[in-house]
Amino acid sequence: MAKRYSRQEFLDRLWGEVKRGKPLVMTGAGNGIAAKFIEQGGVDILGVYNTGYFRMQGYGSLAGMLPMADANEMVFRVGQREVLPQVKEVPVIAGLNGVDVLRDMRVFLEDIKRIGFSGVHNFPTVAWFDGEFRETLEGTGLGYQMELDMLNVAHDLDMLTIGYAFNEEDTESLIKEAAPDIFIFHAGITRGGSTGYAGGRSLEEMANRTQAIYSIARDVKPDLILLAHGAALVNPEDGQYMLDHTDCHGVQLGSSIERMAIEVPLQERAASFKNVHFPQGAKRW
Image (tube, rainbow, N blue to C red; front, side, top):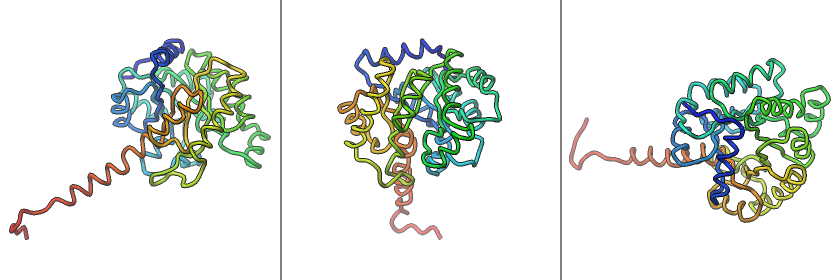
């Protein structure tokens, strides 16, 4: 069963890696076998997200933003039954929907902590929405503030907190009002593979945009741990580019670790088995 960490113990592990000159790697884990072998690969943080579940069922990540299932219940159950039992030492965090009017969030976070999660991340997030839809959510009391409130409750419960933002305004609100331990600028859906986005920013554009957002966040909270995520960050070489061209301390991986690590290898392995043949001259019919 996954080891539980206090917020400070969690932070000490992360900063210890950075001070040893090792960039941080945070990944999703949509099921137990992913968690088991990703941990053995040496990552620093494992996250359980409803998007991870959908990815591992063959759907695109944005399925997790649609009302097809109870996101928080899914993360609780996948964590409890599949991921947490397979993990030994790596801290595990829960990606939770803070805009959940059907739960007492403090009670739910206490349960999340009790079963073995050591941190909380505001995902799914209304920050992904913009335009009239986002304005309506905010205007009807179903906005980003509920996610910030959730992160503050998690902090009160001595859990590490991770914040997502997609633009300058939300970044400033997030850092000022919730002061997360880790900040991640979400640069967009990861491109490539069977369900990835075909367009999006180039790696250079992603790095420039990410660094600009980091500057806003760091102006408010200089001691933030910064992770890069999404868009053109697909391969380890892309992660190195982000380290070389931004102030990030490492990367957060979803599709690029869970989905893309298995799509082509599974297809190729199945094709290899299909290409075996009967011995020459043998008749099996």
